[in-house]
Length: 521
Image 1 (cartoon, rainbow, N blue to C red):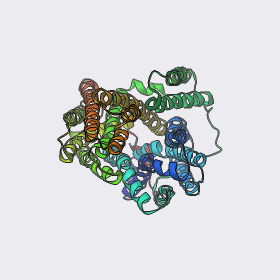
Image 2 (tube, rainbow, N blue to C red):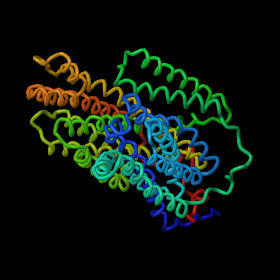
Image 3 (cartoon, rainbow, N blue to C red):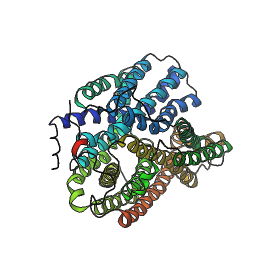
Image 4 (cartoon, rainbow, N blue to C red):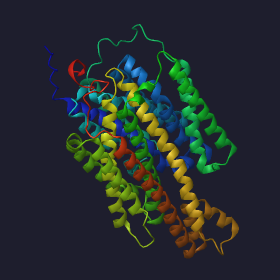
């Protein structure tokens, strides 16, 4: 006789709240620092290279650490490692309040990135443990909305804090959120399985694979960070990206040869994981590109400050929240193929509509296509992520989620670098600096913000209008690329995704059924 699955705890939605708080603070902290850069340069004397490391250190640590963190979560317990990451994040935030030099801020941001790498994939991996298969898509939708909400909210919160408090408040803001998330995680998340204990007889840990993967990912991300300043043809960029590619090839070969790899490459034999992850990467690429250009457009062209810009990006998040809610009942009824393809087509329509923006359009038009983009984003990414999570073995959700988050992170970083080049080329192709003295003309070519400053100093409205038109042209090119990627991904989804949400012959059991569904403490 089959043993019935234990009942789900009614406190599971409160547990989801703890995970949502953790995910929200990660997304927020990734962008809140952007509005503080001028203040850090002024009050701490940070130069441009140090400012780059203040932003890049967080991203490098986050990208490089997720793969080994997933394995540690599976080995020693998702809850334990998640709580450790939340604690580390809080301690680093506390240290950030007292940082007194650019080097100290860089160190704090790097440790914050490490804490984020412990929180982000494991907060996703733990969802199948507390929700049944029919509720996992809804939980993933809520978690996805929280991670996406943090990105545009970061500048809003950061701008408000800097207007009212000192620069260290961007770190102090984390502390109450981390405290709530930590307390909720301790008391609401499920206990780790009894078979997992620190000090238990471990399987060999792939130290060489960890080094190859971390250094390879770091090289790729650092190369992408260098692109805006040095260009794709720079020897340092080409060398760094090339070294990263070689190291990651060596990493893959190592994973195929080692008996206990960090990454189970066999996951890619499952069509749900393979195509779900690929679609999630492409969607992340397109949305990161949109979030890269739109805030610049809202601030430099439409004239909003950082606080107003963050508020005006919220229609995208509103669309995401609506579609994430809709995807939960639509996914089991219509199947992954229909829902994801529809979402991708809506995402493409929003991006291509935005590509028609011209100098006469105001914010109302932007709000329309941002909302459509957000609707498509939610309909595409939530079912794709649900497919990936459903394909994972019950004892390896940490490493599987870490792999998904890592490839998404890499796709987003490299996508922003590539789309930044498209934006720059479009801007320079349309910008007119006729009659502008050469030192000022060279500064105007650097960015639309620099051009606005030059135009103000020279009292040159023609230069300002040309810069705004040039940036809008570059943004349109970026949105065309994002729309084309979404259309291509929609074709792949229509061909390769399963029609139904699950197959009777799935190689891995659903992650939250039977004895693997944990009770909440």
